[in-house]
Length: 355
Image (cartoon, rainbow, N blue to C red; front, side, top):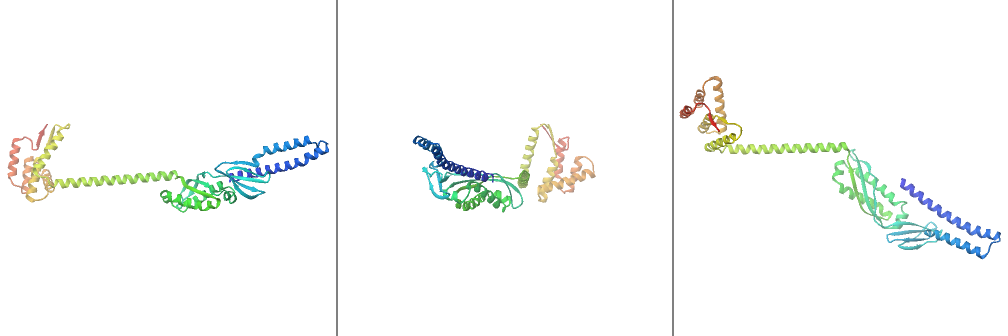
């Protein structure tokens, strides 16, 4: 609006100036000869001086009737207010005080509307800004069909942008920027044709979301990433457990003994210098698993349950408890004799290894 007022003011000032020049020149042509005549000075020398003064005056105002147009400029010529022709490039001679003109630049120009607040379909206020690149294709229509095509183009882009975004939700705006640009250019070009303009490109320059909304979106994204991480860790743990279970079901006695020794070696590499391992219970679980033809893990649980029951019900030496466990589980007594031989060679009732 301010640009339009400044343009109107400048145009009116230029017209007033031309009118004042015409009136001054006519008054001089009438008053000066009459004054010379009444003073008796109407002589050739004074007439020559008067003509010289008129020529100097016309030269000083030569820009009003002699203009030079560059290759990228055109002049819309008006004679007594009516359209006469479109001239340029080169020199153009106007009839003094009768012809006027408007210059039009044919180069590509930029229209940059100010950032504005736009409300989306879901009532979210965005700050958007667009930029347009255009050039004048028909200077006559650019002057005759619109008062100020630059200012009107900016206003039309702003109103069209509000109309397009107002029909979309925030998610649609963010994910369809290219579609919005294409629709904006199509609508602007349709109107700009009547103004003699060719819209080369129109696009959103920036879309600014409210700070509170940006923070909420970041928190939502962080929550989703955390959820995905937890899910991936759980899947990895599940695969690890399944792999262990599958491998444990295929372990043989020699393999178990090797793993025992390897585990003890790894533990010995640390700060510990003594390790006590319940080897007797392992043998009982192995014997029970072979006799009942059941998984080793199930046999191990049964042995531990029976061992704990006898430890609480009949406190005594470890040998008696192991003997009662074998009897309860109907294990061969040869295992007891072998265990007795081992106990006779060792003082403690647990397998002890020192490093």
